[in-house]
Amino acid sequence: MLSSKFYDELIGVIATFSERKHQVILRRLGFDGKRDSLEIIGKELSVTRERVRQLEVSCLISIRDTCGSTLNSKLKKILNHRKKALYLDDLELEDNWFAGFLNNQLFLIQIIKKLTNYHAFKINGRDVITKINKEQWHNLKLEVLKVLKSQIVIKKPSKNEVKKLISTTAVEFQAEDLSDLLYESIEDKLYFAASKGKGQKVLCSVGKGLASFLTALLFEAVKPLHYTEIAQKCSDIVGHDVKGYVHNNLKGLAYLYGRGIYGTIEHFPLSEADSKRILIAAEGIITQGHPKRQWSCNELNQKLQLPNLPNNLNKYLLNIILTKSKILKSVGRLVWIEKTDQVPRMDLQEAVFLIVKQAGKPISANEIKSFLIKQRGIDKFLTILPTAKMIRVKPNVWGLVERDFLLPKTKRLKILNSLHKNLEERQTGLHITELKQSITKKNMPDNITAYMLLSLTQTDSRFVIRRGQLLGLSVWNDAKRISIREAIEKVAKEISTPVTISNLRKMVEKIVGHEVKQPLNKLLESTNFILDESTKTWFLKA
Picture 1 (tube, rainbow, N blue to C red):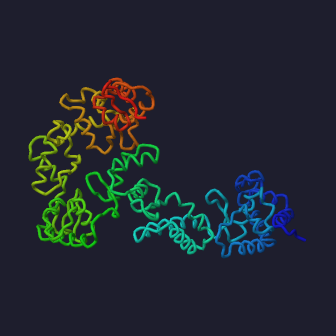
Picture 2: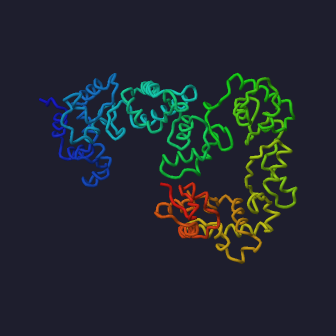
């Protein structure tokens, strides 16, 4: 007569097998805490892996016929309509019939997998017995994240509402028992915050990236924040400098409320009624003009003729209002056009190129902007970007690659190839002061300055210029070289007494490995250094 405990029944059945079958099934089921492959067992028994598989199947059929039905029915009884996860190590507390597997949990997991319709795998560090398999669990998590992201757009849910949504989705996957574990497994991807820091916290972003964190930070901010303040808050929380990544992440993520100032739609100060009538008026101005016409928000704001216009309406708020338009399209930099596929629009960068070309010589950024403001209503804060045809010949002065660098294409390519080879060999970035020395003199004309050389690399996708005028390869994650700011931060950890600016400069130069000519005052102040005017020395803020 069989024992009343599953473990004893199981061992009793296996004891009836031949020596070979006995060894095969125990090793395949991980009886000693480790599962052996068909191939390893086959080699040791001098049989093929297929023969080992056949022996294993034969043993499993015998076990299933003896106690498989009871195993299935007991698990079904425990898991049916269950609302909490069933942990493997708690199984015998649910039914004493499962006692005896405490030191053989891998053995029990394999038995459940091979003899029942249920599954056992680790969730959040503990083995759980479930109705769904590991792949279905993974798909369930993805589906929940998708549901929560879509819900944020409709109405930002509270934590309790999030848990209800998770529970509902879990039920659809026949995994209601895993609802709590599901929340725990995605909790680090959920950002809850109170709008403007007041009231109940709600889900405002989903994901582990910087963009999700920034969304939550801005949602909770009492007012729109300058990106430097946002970057500092992020850097303080994550424990390292992320300033270089914050500005790019904010574009398309938040609304621009001023130069470098970002906020959410919750910070928008105008009423819906005012926004609608301003939008209609602005659409009228643009659609009545020439289809080619590009309109800056600054110009539109001046042309709006409406009674009782809000006193605080400015080009930034107008730009936010225009994002709701179905007939207008943004071309960037607070500039809008009418949507049309019939009239080609000249690209802004192409317009800049033509201005530099028509000038017949290098031209300053201010002169370029003056032309654009007169001709096209472009905002004075326009950012000019380098292209394959146009780059800076010196700070804030733009020229044409073919005209103003006095180098044929073959010569430029030879210089760039030489730089690329040098960077690949040294595997560290080059500072602007080291560029000319890194290229042989026969390849480097005297009229090419270090600044021009650095600019020239912007025409080649193999290179990237990092903070601190450090040139690296685009395949690198960073410049593989410490920047001046990082060097100052390092110096700050080493000094304990006031230091003169000349000594600070020497310490920084020793760390970065090149001469530092730029003023350090602002960098020192941003790293908590304070100038003692009486002694002309710098010390760290306590």
